[in-house]
Length: 322
Image 1: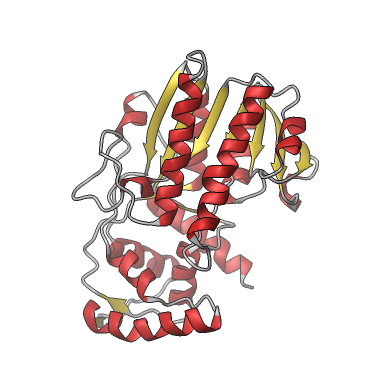
Image 2: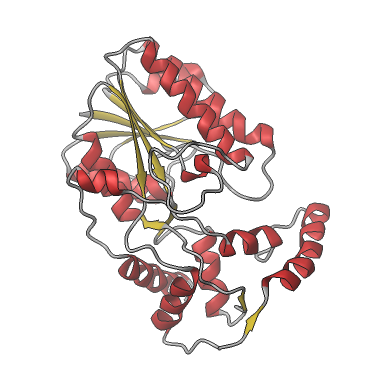
């Protein structure tokens, strides 16, 4: 199948393109700038999802579109910025697909659409996003639902991943490993909260598995890796991978949040993205438990455990920082 991957040069995109090529699909990449990883592997088109004509040109001869493009950082993005890319950008893609008569779409959403959930979420859990990012992703999902109702032969796959990590990712998991490696990590809070996550190769493999089984309609799948680990488990595994002993010192959460609120103020004034903020500490101590039984019940089995995935990321981190 001829597949256009929008956001092909990003963290998830580089792994997903490799697996799709291995599965005998023909790939066209579409992103702002080509990465070194992809050169010589597939046709690449430089473009912006806000450029409707550019999207249509990229969709010539395409049978399926995968949308990985998103605004998702937790610092320095306005509400308008989230909706501009995540909602309006998706609308542009859908309009281009209508004009080019393409009926297959894979959209990478997020478990952020659930908001704060007691217990473990599933695809049946009511959506109630708690931040601008989650709201913008949900708005995009609703556009896809409308796109399908206009032609019931269309096929849409919506994947809602938990936190994604792995080599070549420089987001929160990288920052956590970096903080521990540089001996700057201090245990805050009890650490007994579940933190669902997924290793990038498993997420990409699940996507390839589901693409092969697409049917008319809008199908929604969570993705997280099992077993679900607590934040303490992640910390302990990283320390073990680094061959270090973890300190038993632990600081209560409340006073740390008071101190880091000052850092938040400095961040707003200076526009500096500090590694430690009250928001990141709150997020790390919050329970984010998201199940993905549905894809497993349909036959998908991930190959990499969370522990092995973390080990691979730490190994890459050490090489990347030599």
